[in-house]
Image 1 (cartoon, rainbow, N blue to C red):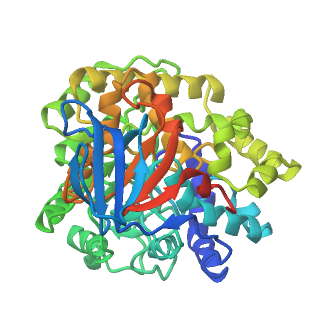
Image 2: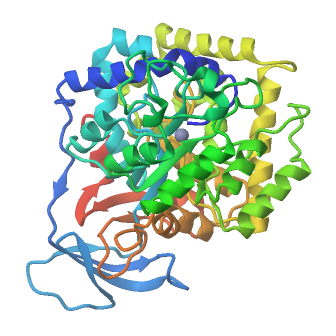
Image 3: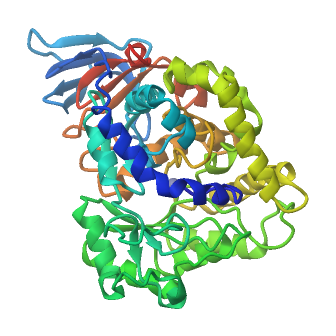
Length: 509
Ligand SMILES: [Zn+2]
């Protein structure tokens, strides 16, 4: 998560409820109502006569045949001869691309219902949770990376009948009393949040915890013990509005060293010039947000020289960046509920949840958050600041493109209050944001497939259509190198070679 500033106030209210919410879902019997999507085990499947688009190729392969066995791609060619009994899928006129990877998600967090709604309507929460993994599939995401893991979330997600591949950075590393760790329980469970002792913020350290157990090594070990493929550290001084205890550069450098020792990549939550500088000074592998916080007139969207220099430095050092434009743009739904009319939402949220969001209770919840945001905003008020923040994300994104900063695709779903970051669909909207801001379509595809896989150390398995890799594939009716709207034309998803018709991924199907 990494939101526009007023969000932070709301986080104060919500953070302590994550554990309770996760427990509730478990108590509901791991969402027993989830209905298995139409699946066919295809230990032998051949996709015939398709246009194969994969980022390691200089050009698409026309009239391609792709043979899948035991969940992996075993042969690629044209007019392949195969044994009888192999399932044939005619790809004529269609496009085959690798399954998308979203390397910044929080699937355990609600992207539709607030705490009160979850408490009042456990049946809506159950229906919502049942759809989350299916929604990622429906929008083409066959692998996701949870950037601030609650262990119960992984158990829930992987316990659902149909779900994308799940990776994580383990529990994110946080400073006591700071962002995402405002409320540290008196007898804090050692893993939530994954605290690190920050000597420059010693006054906010909980007296009941022995700081010697909260070194960088301990924090990284906790992530590693959770099966992490990466380590996530939060550097958030307060979105340019607040003054919270935060992680200073020396501590981040210690995390860097501990992560390197364990062969884990380091991802840093940073969205402002100070936190970006800190991430670069600590040699982060990935900056997990775009750049939209800097001092000066908050209404002014023109990036200062310092922002330009940092982007240039990121390009020089080959630090990967997740622009996460939806982290800001998704706030729009709090003020403008037009997203409820988007027909694509029917694949992201159950109709019962959409009905609730339209109901008087749902509208009231939305307006309450909108009022909180407005009250928390300094002059000239929320709306101008919000619009400036969107322009800032776009302006810095364009500089990143010009400077050839290596970009990887992450949507931060959900990173906002309200329903502006619906599961799966938010990733689709993030793809749109990139295209609208001028990113070439080939770059977008590569960032969401091969470059994500490479950056995360997963490219032996994922990210391209090559012999030996997992058969995580998307069959599209339109060409994603011609129009970004092709990502709305998914006909079928293959996960580990299993064919899933997109239509079967509708809620309650
Ligand atoms: Zn996030």
